[in-house]
Length: 256
Image (cartoon, rainbow, N blue to C red; front, top):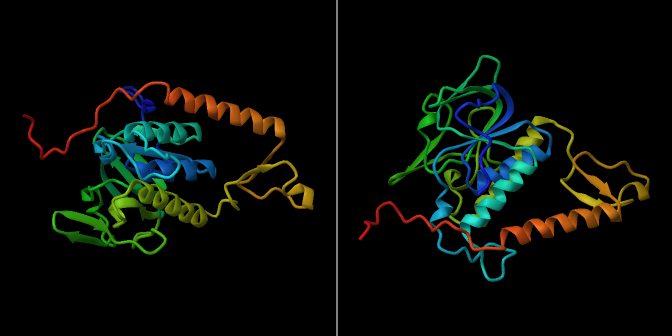
């Protein structure tokens, strides 16, 4: 597994653009998108995503015979790191509004982070939002969800939620897709120049007399082949051996 960038000596940046709470498929995907858009992105996570309980993931597109769930998380984590999303093992204990319309994020470890945007993807923890009066919370039995608009925004400016904590179905592909969708909302609201996150062949835009739009990149055939070769090498290294970790059993199941 790719290690987080945190250690006992490291500290989280004090001022950032985007803070993502939760390191499952929704959080990692959101981090990939916001970081690629040029927003300084930090992901705070503690514990293990629920996906690690899956014995074999068989409904995630692109893997005809399924894929080891822990391996998929490793690959998502690697992709987030490669695109500049910084990850730290931290327990978020409080999110509060600041006087300048930003959000203050505090952790159990003592970090105090000021972020323009916070994306909640932590399932199923909403205790850290108790100081935000305008966040709608929906209780359903033992679970609590964050009330969101169709674009993932909440009643607090700059606060968003994605994935299961936003009431989305309990499927990995849905959580990842919702993380991407809400990240695009954040990117749009940030007003950073952004068109599409596309890597296109040389002359795709310029050959039609257009400038390459923000967020897009034209590459020549040599660079395309280089990137494809690298991607094949990386994937082969991931699938060279079986993942060493066993799935995590549900905590309510007693060991025999």
